[in-house]
Length: 316
Image 1 (cartoon, rainbow, N blue to C red):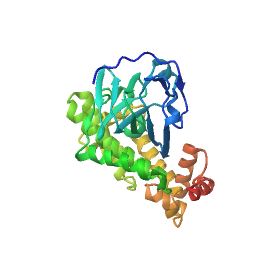
Image 2: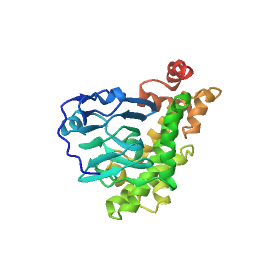
Image 3: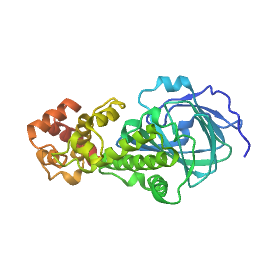
Image 4: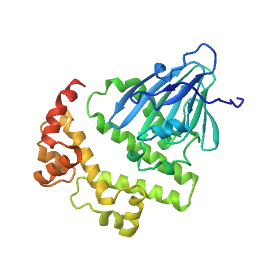
C-alpha cells in the first residue's frame, strides 16, 4: 500500500464520552468529516471500548489537541474490516484485521483508512496500566500479531466486547479493572520483547509489582517492605520507581484497595455483605478507619456511596 501524506486537519471532534478528540478529514470528497458520527462506545469503569466504522478517512491528532486535553490515554486498536495506517513517534505501520496496534493520546498521531473500515479501540488511562506517557514510546505504531498468548487474549476480548458489551450490566468497574490488568500484562510482555535497557526494566518491574499487589489486596499485612522483599529490591529503590509516577508504594496500595471497595459497593451480587465486610475483602480491618479513608478519597462515606449508586447499578 502506498504511503498516504495527510494534511493538517481543520475540523475537530471533541466529545470526551465517545472518542479522544481528533482532527478528521475525509479521504474522498463527500464523506462526513465528524468521527463521532461513526463511533459508538461503552465504558467499563475507567476503560472505554469504542466501535468506529465508515468510509475512507484520515484522523489527525495535533499538538493543539494534546495540550488541550486533561487525562491522557493509551489506545489499543484492532481492525475488524479494512486496513489502517498508523503514524506516531517517527514510525509508520500498516495494520490489517486480527492484528493489534497502539497509539498514545498524549502525543500527535495520524491514522488513515483508505477503504471502508470497521475497528474496535480500547482506551486506557495511563495510570490504570502503570505507565506514563513517557513510557509508551516503544509501544506506539508497532503492530503485532494477535494469534497466540496475551495478544490473542486481548484480540479476542476486544472482539467479544464489541459483540456482547451491551449485555454486561453488573460489576462494570470490576470488568474494567480486569481489562486494564490484562492490558498491563500485555504491554509488559511487549516491552520485555523490544528492549532490555534500564528504563524498560523499571517499567516491567512496575507492572509486575502492581499485579502482585492487586492479587494480595485482602492481606492486611501487605506493605511496601513486603513488596520490595518479594521482588528482591530495596525499599528505597521501590519508592524511587513509584516516585517516577508521582506516587508512593503505600499510597498506591491504599488507592487500589479503595478503588476495589468502590467497585464492590456497586455490585448487586455483594449486597448481602456489610460495609465492614466489603472493607475487609480489600484489607481494611476496622470500619471507622475504612470509612474515614473512603470519605477522604471520594468525598462520601462507603454507606452513602452504596446508597447513591444503588439505583444506577440496578438500572444496568
